[in-house]
Image (tube, rainbow, N blue to C red; front, side, top):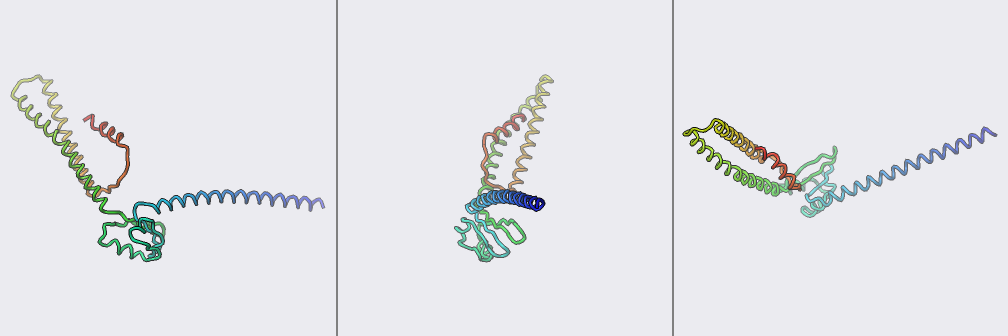
Length: 215
């Protein structure tokens, strides 16, 4: 009788412990699911309102599209991805593919016109900067060359001639740096991917001043 009572108490206690652990795990899983659901809703809302057309393709079928894609191409859900490729022909849109899994692929359409405008703006800014740097530098260089001619025909102190030679060498180094800089920038713009990005202007200007001042 005593053993049966002990066994009954043991079973009830074990059951309560197991029940407590199950409830605890269930509460944890429920909390994690709620967090995942919130995160999923956030990303779904973000991509639904994304400024570029976006599609999710399963094998060859369009399963999902965002509002921008709906606005430009209409409702293509449950249709073949050929509809997108047909639209892309002779258009200013360029597809960027992201393979999400073995079956799912994301199609993001990029407006090529905007990229061309950004590149052209970059080229204009580069040409302007080149002119603003090279024009005064050329004037200084010409002045130094004329000064050198005058120094050659007169006797000056050795210290003055050394200072002038140092100035001339510094100008040559700066000229070489400017040439390398603009050659590199002109080369980069040909294949360089440009995108719009907001950034604080003051730190950028301060960094430029920091690196240019020693020259």
